Length: 221
Ligand code: HMH
Image 1 (tube, rainbow, N blue to C red):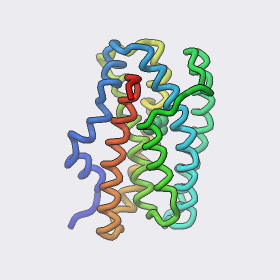
Image 2: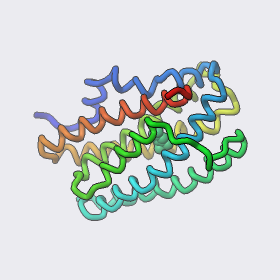
Image 3: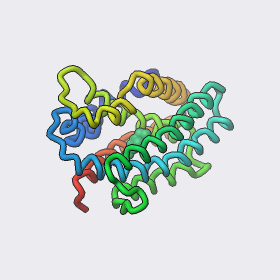
Image 4: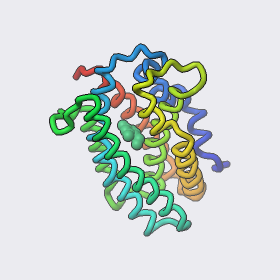
């Protein structure tokens, strides 16, 4: 079986599932300016909580890279990602102050809790490097593909939301996601069939969790 370019193959096979989060109504409403700012504010509060949980997850991938990777540049890629997370947390605090979102009072949504629990399960030492790296790639790439769509030609994105869109839609973040993709492809080329299957299931799981996460912007249960 030809295993190169595994990710491209998965995205092609699961294209409808893949566009579920990357072309979610929340994202489309930013792009066409029909968004209700209260949805954006709800997203902001929930994502701040998520990112704080995402830091230890990314650190666990760094730890696995330092032990298991056959290419020592992997660690440097994740390290640069961790460094930008520090900047990201500051950005959330600034943005929350600007929008009057009290971050200390955010009630964590059930879907967000589910997502964070999933991240925790991936942090266990027994979870394979390829599998956790696939999750890292998918989590970052969904945001990159979503927010870059709000920056493309024809957009009507409200100027107030451009900073958020640029955070994940900018070229530098796209470059970072491509580096993650290269690592995942390399890792999966050498993976045993069982790990490959697990990684694919993890990819699909992330897509579902991302859809549910965007759904929380509505405010309902
Ligand atoms: C829910 N997925 C979610 N939040 C994020 N900040 C990212 C992905 C990208 O880091």
